[in-house]
Amino acid sequence: MKKFHRLIHHLFGGALLLAGVSCTSIEVRRDEPVSSWVSRDSMKRKSEASMRIAGDHIGGRTIEQFFQRHSAILSDGGMPELSKASRETRLIMPATEGYGSAVSLGDGYFLTAAHVPVKGHGGLFCLERDGTPVVRPYRVVWKEKSADLALLHADVDVPAVRWASENALANGASVFTFGFGGGEWKPSEGQILGRRSTGEEDRHFDLKLTAPVVAGDSGGPVVTADGKLVGIVTRADYRWVQAFGRAWMRSGSHTTRPDVEFLEEIIAKDQATRG
Image 1: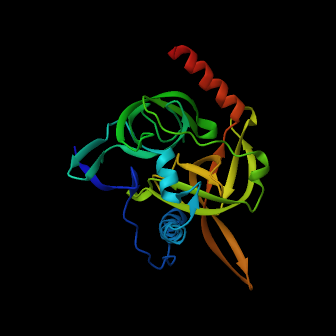
Image 2 (image 1 turned 180 degrees about the vertical axis):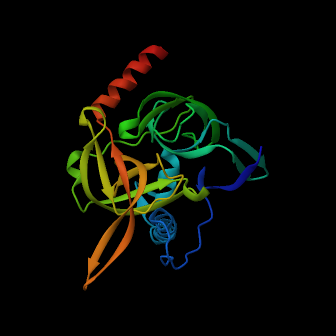
Image 3 (image 1 turned 135 degrees about the horizontal axis):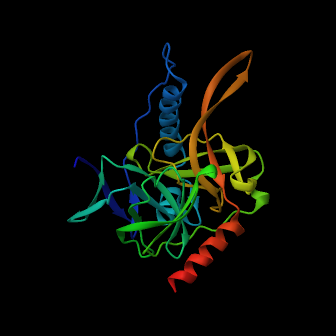
């Protein structure tokens, strides 16, 4: 099986730092599909955002340290591996399998996008509460494809992110996103543009964001400026921007916010079966 490698360095008691992506100018090619342009523009703008907010902090930690403390990388259908040498830990992901991201809800539960764990099993990489990098198998507890939401469980101890209040989800509110897009565990930023109901019985919300995301970010956390959980990244998107008599496309994204009480009931029932 072919594999790709990502080098992980230990900083400040277990926080991770991965190399950034260089920036390039993006132009729309003749006859280029919109999806191709969105992918290239999103990669460029996420790289720029990551560098721009690198010095920002949430709860006394840098943005990357905050997200790495509460997030996970998923491999669908295959198990990642950890190879340790000296002070470096190498994460090896199966190249033939899909991968994505997830956010911790506590007690080993993670929220992700339903289209990430397609095969229903695989491996999860994260930092435990004490900063130790681990890889564990996960199981799918619940999935709702119509809302692109899935709940997973793994035998790990990762701090939870607290839910943002409804008052924090107004249009124009600033948010940060995080994920393993493009093979880099990196953040992005943007604002909320609007929302609509989604999923079974319209119990969840789909929020449109200006934040650029790329393939692999799906399932990663979206949080408010003070680190409260809005939802998870579900897909990249674009919008038309008009100014000074001109119009152009701008890449963005969507996040799904679950019905929190509904989700907590599912977790409680699963906890009861686990004893």
